[in-house]
Length: 360
Length: 163
Image (cartoon, rainbow over the protein chains, first blue to last red):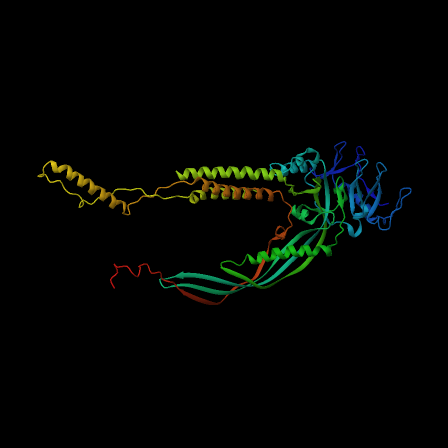
C-alpha cells in the first residue's frame, strides 16, 4: 500500500487544506493558518519512500480479467479506513466517504517529482462566479445551462505539464518587389524593382507549456494560457492538499513535438514581420534550428467543470492562477432561429422605412 | 466580442444607406414652357378695325399653340422621381436577411472559446529577439508600357464636320 500524506492541524487535529487566498495551509475547522515551509518535514518521507506494494482484493464470486486491473490502484483512507480505488496517474484526491484530502506520495517520488508548482490563486467561489459571468448575456444559450445545480460540480486539479526552454535560430531568404504605376496621354507604365532579402536571427523562449496528461484535452489546456511562471514555487506536496492532482502519462519526448511546432510558428512570424515596405514578398527558403532545449516538469492549477446536456458532454476550464475562463457552450437552435427572424424583420422594416423617406 | 459587435453594427448601417441608392426612380417628362419665339405670332396692328381684333387674337392663339408644340419637341424636360414599393421591399428584405445572418453567425462563434494555440508568443523572453543579418539587396528592374486605346467621340457622318 502506498504511503498517503495527510496534514493534520496541530490545534484540533483536523485535516489541513491549501488556501489559495492566503497561500498557506488552513484548517477548515478551527480556521488556524500555518506556513507551508513549516510542514516541509513531511516531505522527507518522499526520500525514504518504499516501492509500491500492490494488493488486489476481489469481490467473492468475481475475478478480474487479465489486463483489467492495469492502471488501477487501491488506497486506504487513514481517517475513515475507506478504500479508494483510483487510476495509477492520480496523485492527489479526496476520500469519497469522508471527503478527506489525500496525497499519494508514491506518485511524486524519485523521477516523478515535479520541479515546480504554481499554487491556486483563485478559490472555488471565484470559479463559480467566473462560470456565471461566462454564461451571462448569452442569447443563444439553452436555459438549462443557467440552472444553479450545475455550478457545484467544479474540481480544482493540478495538471502535469512539461515546460520547454529553447533558443530558436532562424535563417530566411525572401524575394520582394516594389511596383510603381503611372500613365501619360499615350501609355500606361508599370515599373517593377526586384530585391533579395536575407534575415538571420535568434528568438529565445522560456517555459513553453505542453500538457503531460492524456486526461486533460490539449486544446482546453492551451485555451486558458498564458500561465505566469514567475509565480511558480518549488514543489511541495502541501500545495496539493484539498485539490486533485495527476502525474504525467505523456513523456517529455512525446511532448517536445508540440512545443517545437509552436516555437517554430512564432519564430517564423517574428522574422516575417521584419520585412516591410514591399508590395510583393515571397519566401524563397528558410530553416529554424533549436538550441539549448531544456524540459522541466511542473504542476499547473486548473478548475474543471463537466456537465452533460442533450447527450453531449461539455467541459469548462478556468486558469487557477489568472482566472481566465473558457468552454464551448451549446447553441439553442430555436433561440438562434428566433433571433434570426427578429433581426431580419427589424432591419427589413428599418430599410423599407428609410427607402420610403428617401423616395419622397 | 466588442469588435464583433462593432463590425455587425457597421455592416447594418452600410446596408441601410445602400437602400437609398438601390431605390428605383422612374423619370417622366412634363411640358415646361421656357422662352417662346415671337416670330409665329401675328402682331395686332393698332390701325386695324376692331372687327379684325378677334381674328388677330385667334391667329395669336394658333401661334401660341404652335409655340407650345415647338416647346414640347424641345429638350426642356425635368426628371421626376417615382417610388416602386414592391422592389424596395424585396431589397430591404434581402438586406435584413444578410444582416441577420451576419449577426447570428457572430453570436454563434462567440459561443466557442476553446481553440488550439498556433504559436508561443506569450512565452517569448523579453528582449529575446536578436537579428544578426538584415540585408535588402537590389537585383534589378523591369519596365512595361501599354498603349492607351483612344475612343473617337465625333460621329463619322456628322454633317457639321467639314472634311
